[in-house]
Image (cartoon, rainbow, N blue to C red):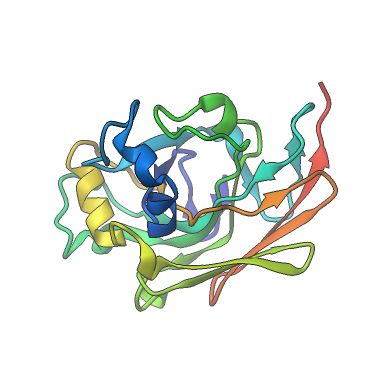
Length: 220
């Protein structure tokens, strides 16, 4: 998928429980099985290539699923090989930023994230373009607004991340290398707004444009 001026590799990594609202939404359940305590490292999963969609693309609601959940968040686009980075300089390895809509089928457990709920075709709209790194003064101070059919449904802020962007990059690259064109989604606020077939979702970040997608009924 090409998003000028950067070519995305198709590898998108999502991060769970990295927004304070998502972290606190588990409440006491985080101390119970199967979690048995809060995570000590970033909780990651993959949004594979089949999930990628662009602004304006339709997103299909699977048959038998009444509604989907939106996961509006900031995406970090890797610009050069990133391995064992330091938090203070981690953002220097970015090409830029974009908006990510981490769509999922609503589910309750985040332990060993469900591929069938997260990795359906079209479940990761990206865009509408990549904002160059130099154009974003502070990625840890960005307001994210989510609209459904023109109605404001959620306002979140990257200042509420459990791990700030540089810290998250450092912690992830401690155990894996991120390559140019990869995208690391920093994590969405909770609860994510719900949408049904026939509705439109729009996500805004100032200076990033609008990521817009219609949701349509899928067929078996």
